[in-house]
Image (cartoon, rainbow, N blue to C red; front, side, top):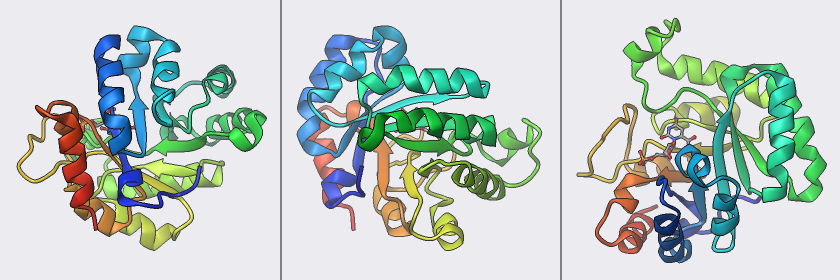
Length: 235
Ligand SMILES: O=C(O)c1cc(=O)[nH]c(=O)n1[C@@H]1O[C@H](COP(=O)(O)O)[C@@H](O)[C@H]1O
């Protein structure tokens, strides 16, 4: 899929719920207010392939299953997901080059309808101490850049990173990789479990192509109005 052509198209709303009726209601109200709707592990694990199928009737789907397994298994999973026609699909960069190459190879079977393959670098919920506890003593920014280079050279189309790394990734990698950025918090909204955050406008000004927002929109009294307010504040 092409890069967003408007502020509205930059917004991806994460529909994180295990309740299919709530997911359908959120999709109905939010589809006109954003570019894509994200179906993640919570909804997919609860509802199965019917989840993206329901949502894709309303908006393009970002299918965020963060695949991370041996290359043969990930290739098979990508092949099994292609009939759902996601516009974007995630896998963990830490799965390594051979896994990403296998995913790319499998995705190419969809031809022109191939989803954008996005490599998740360092989860936005990890701060430097939490990352160090996994055995990575480099700061998050260095690990994000290392994983970004690995993923792109193995065939990923883009990256998922926190807003804190976007400017450095653009400096190092240029305009080519798609940068999809969660960890977004409008001023005054609760951080929750996110550690590396910034506002929607800061993320886009730094070079994000798309921003991913979940609870600040879906937890609002009027989710469509919350989404519209985010879009109105983008540069
Ligand atoms: O791949 C993702 O989308 C993702 C990667 C990451 O590092 N951090 C992250 O928060 N996400 C997703 O982005 C969404 C953020 O939701 P909120 O924290 O509610 O805005 C969730 O659906 C996460 O699964």
